[in-house]
Image: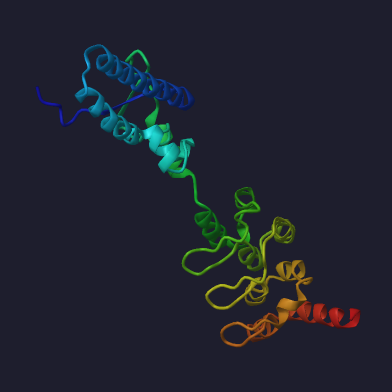
Length: 258
């Protein structure tokens, strides 16, 4: 008579589109049946109470339907909105039980799904791990994670961007990686919590390769950080004369071209 408190929550495996169609058909069918029955009784027996109840309850029942609420009161019926409180395979936990349309238990490897979800790194983690690896960093994982939409992502604590990290890293392939993210739309003018742009990063961390890849951004060599230092001044202050010379040469060439 009482439900087992330790029982697993049961889900039926079904294609999302098929479930939407089934729900819509059920809604239309039940609504039309209720209307037809009530109107029929009213015409045949002159029953007014049933008609009045149907007139009031019909719209209320429609408003409570998940499909109707999503279409008219929500954001739509796209799968990511989860209007039926459903779960995808990645959302399932070991406490969930999945059955097919006939009620048979579906065998699944929940551990693998959970593991895959846990091991998928966020862009924030990839950026920080790349920086922690220093000159030995493998840039492949970072470049695979970057695209036009996230190439200017900033870390939560220090507001580091991908191009800042690449500019200061000094790892093999840094220059080509910087050119690639610039092509994506990365903005080297963005600053972190210290007021450093990507050129400040190359200057402070003595990354000659990063500096050379950014010499076309001469306007950023005039930008001062929160302590009032330009990238050239930062490089000189840290004793990174090679980077300072690269930037000064770029400024000189820029003056000549004008």
